[in-house]
Length: 263
Image (cartoon, rainbow, N blue to C red; front, side, top):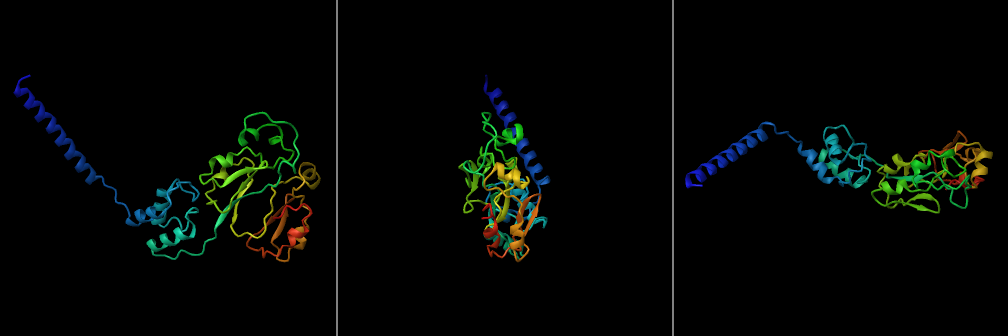
């Protein structure tokens, strides 16, 4: 190849590169999307777990919603009150009071306390086991299956299977809600970190059926309702529930519970 051909090739390649560079530069300016500076500042404060516990797809989506006024400044359950206060400062608003929430497993049916109908030898997966007869091998159709789907999805290692049931370490839990969505028995709910008393059972079976299945299941006797002076305890579908906003922590419901399922 002679020198003329080399020069022509260099000029052509350089010209094409220059044209592409100019085109991309102009396009970047013309189609630039303006980003709210507050959105970027909020995103920098968020923890970046992208857990979805706030109800949005990730931290960037939450930051955009907060900047637009579509989400409260304390919407991040992982960051909690400290992050909420920083975001409130960025947005120039009051953070407001927030209650720290944690996940709670409504089941006390450990291996010693609950009965089984048969031996299950299938895939050790809660969602798969929920499809077998009676919703799993445990006699209680509402109890924790203990195969750890919630453990697998928890990004903070806050849940572990202990003696056949899932237990949440509330000191580690960030209330992201992934375990709640994963549990096929709908056993997990968010409760205040400082909740005084909680019913550790989710059974809706009548008392005699529950007693045959589990030694510690709620039988819906209503003694807790009668004992509560603040009207915080109710029984629906043979299952007791405590309204945390009304509960004063007197402990009378716990004392009267014959199955010791209120903790």
